[in-house]
Amino acid sequence: MASTTGAAKRHITQETFNECVRENMEEFDMIEEDAIADAVTQFESQGVDLSTIVKALDVVHPVLAALKVIEADESDDETCLHVQLVALQDQFKDAVGSSGAKELAGQINGPTILLQRLPAVQDVATRILLLSTLQSMVRCRSQIFLEVQSNDRSRRHLRRWGVVIACRHPDGRVLVVERFICAKNEVNKKRLTSHGIIARLVVLFRDRSMVPEGGTKDIADVIRVLTLHDDTYVVLLASVSIYISSQDRQHHFIHTHDIVKLFVEHGVIDAVLPYLRGVSSDPDTLSSWLAVVKQLAITEDTCRKLVAAGILDLLPTFQQHAHVQYIA
Image 1: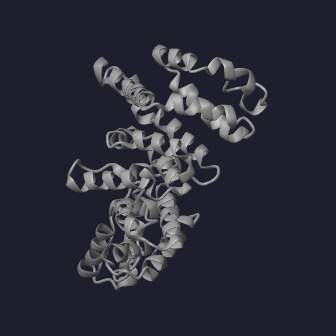
Image 2 (image 1 turned 60 degrees about the vertical axis):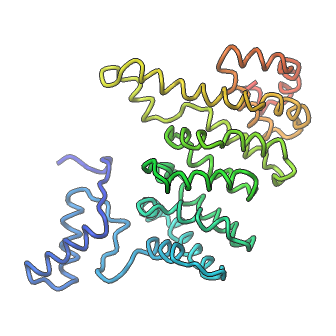
Image 3 (image 1 turned 90 degrees about the horizontal axis):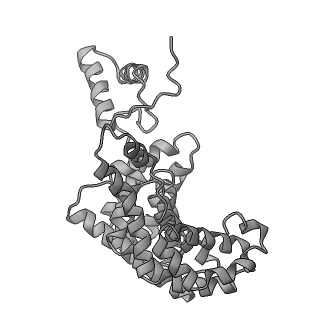
């Protein structure tokens, strides 16, 4: 019999599992414990992942419980919020169940629920905890962030995220979250760039006094992710000409060029090159920004602008650092 270990797991909702348990109890006169055991056996034999399913009819999964409390809480007292965020962190750090917990959070718009609370949070420690929780929630799960219909709620969600990036909460975790949600996800990149993220990132970099020490590297890492064509699903589709038209394939790759063009139009070259002259003593930061420059140099026009801005004069300085020679 072939092993199913490497096969993709299927998922069901808590409601589907509970319905199966109730059917076992009603139709086969099972007690709850036996009905649950039978349901688990049925679903697991079909390759269903039950890691996010609570095996009891009257118990709510901790992720759902915490997010529902956060969503319903309208008080100014942030103690309750802090407690629920800690509960979420515990779920996302669980080595066994974290993947399923994140998937479950995405099913009920967990990132949106957290972002709705962020602007009103006054306590610095709670704000940092919220951002850290959001970071944990979307890490390796970028698809749960913005893959929603284009409606009023999602547009408000995007605008709210734009406010966060616009220096209102210049904590490095915001930038890390931004990188996580855009990595290998063209949908998220497109929606965020269409709501002004590029301009805000450039403004944030220009006004570096708002950024914590070492934060410019985080900005560079976000820009690099935005300018990478790294969505493996889109690349795969674009390579299979029998399924999509030549025009559609070209569109997927043009979007990355459009993002680069927008960064250039917002003056990122003129902002970055003078900065590189003074950051050569920090190899990690220098490496990140050189990776950005490399991504920008994907069109002939951008290459000309880089040369005009003096990039060639800086190369000898860059080459003194073995850590960044492969990029330069």
